[in-house]
Length: 569
Image (tube, rainbow, N blue to C red; front, side, top):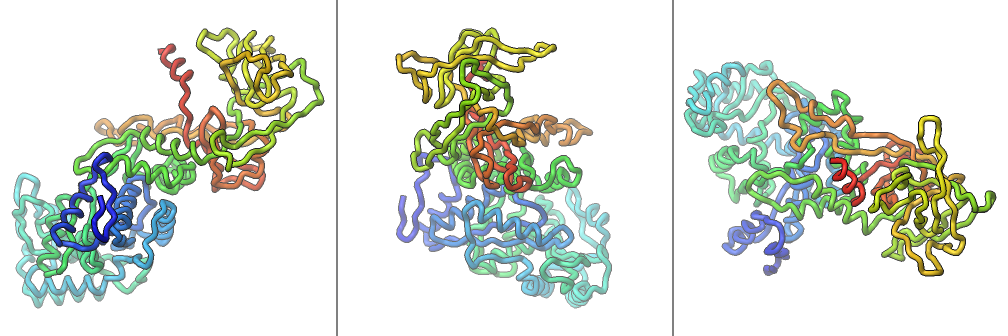
């Protein structure tokens, strides 16, 4: 579907996106002739996968409709905000592939104007300074089933309110002694409309404005007016702000902001095995359940970037799950499927053995070393190739051998022949065990006529194994990451419980793996596929020159593992 001056991809056969339907109607009716969206994070933590959905939506709409998307920091609570978070948010948005150009703003840019709007409401008789304590304000607010009651300070004169608000601004009062509230309706069925707070005293240093201000606007006041100041057309929030829309409209309409933006709510991203609450993620960091905001088990963008997720996979995932009005749960497997799809096309194949057992070819010359040419991709010649050394002793995965294999086990067993990738056919003859019965070595013979991994006589084998030459292998640290939480819905806990109870004790295993020598100089951030094992990324934080550390990004599908699990169950 193409509209004059606006390129809007058709979603008739794709995931739902009701926001596009709204924009299309706005253009058709002449309500808008351009799109201005915004992504408004509070700089009090690191962005997570839920924010990625909002980023992709807002910047994607601006791109597709040839409009603009603003990056605006909601820095109205200086007690929790830091420049570190501002920098990380900018890095994350850029990493996802989006750019705000000249349109980066802060709510603090508008502090003077927001103050003037507050004064205007006082002069209109639509706002007053309340001197109830926070506890009394909660008591006066009422409940969901009973109306609130008016504050005894609600009928202060305009002059008294102006004087008190000016005193608040000058720092003449302590925190909690006064608060500016909108004068709306204490009996409103929408509790948010029961004289909500607009400004509070907060004598805290601000990361941008320093000590210029000691009163700060509340989010619901600053958010809608910042949208209006910037000319935002479509202000997209998540469903928890649905009840706040009435206040959003009241502030803009009461102050006569025109043209004015409109707020629309969409379902937040609920991803299985994942928590997307910044408050709870902060607890994980502060209580050292993870190593930091960028721990690869964290759903933060910095964490999944360090784990090796490519940005195109995140964009693909956000596009596929669509934009809905109702809350729903998305299986983590959908995200991993996008990761695999992207990495399968872009990651070079290399050989790494994560659970090694040594194999000795008894009829291979002891001092001989050969090299085989391995392509980095069987489908993409442009990735090139490298030389991989082969010798009499090498490692394979311990899981690739069974002494007494069942019929459908197509790997190595005593008397069985398999192919070593791009090398030779080998046949197992016997094994060497330690005193505990643990297999220490597997002995094989090889067929020198099968060099390159192909038989000249046309015989076929069903199993192909990856391997690493023992005397050329590099010992590297590999971090096997799994879900941080063991349950699908980690926030669902029994009464008196804590979401910490659902942490997965097996979320990280650190092992030493054997990898081919071409990986000695692997650069931080490099993504590879260990053949038949999974996708891995060189850790960007802890790796040293010549000593790469590999984080497991995602596993590969393994039909035998599924069969084995089914048999065990």
